[in-house]
Amino acid sequence: MLIRIYEDNPNEKSIAQVVDMLRKGGVVIYPTDTVYGLGCDINNQKAIERVCEIRGIKPEKANLSFVCYDLTDISQYTKPFDTATFRVLKKALPGPFTFIFNASNQVPKLLSSRKKTVGIRVPDNRIAREIVRQL
Image (cartoon, rainbow, N blue to C red):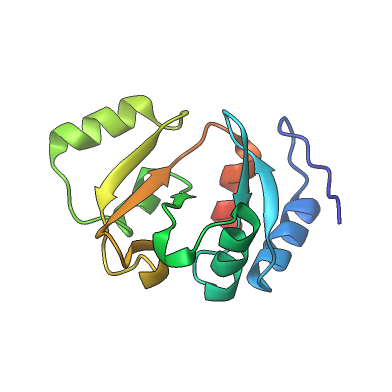
């Protein structure tokens, strides 16, 4: 299914369709501020496995990062970090960066089982961030 969403004015109904599909285990291709990403609901193990299958990698060996809506959202998936790190994040995000952090217990085991770290992005793209916010 193709759902066209315009970044300047993301249609709420279209975003809701995408979010519903993700909640049901779907996989989507979505824009970021750099390239298109392949995404799913990080709390759905079968969806994560499907992303890995599409990419041709084994889930236990995958280095997957995920999108957060904002700095507040990041804190639930990472162990606490210092003020200097927060300042760097505040200057750089949203933006075209993936930061690697020590993973909190909120990160699904499939995403942090091999390593105890997680890659997190806050892209400068309204579509990606709105999908995550609603999810």
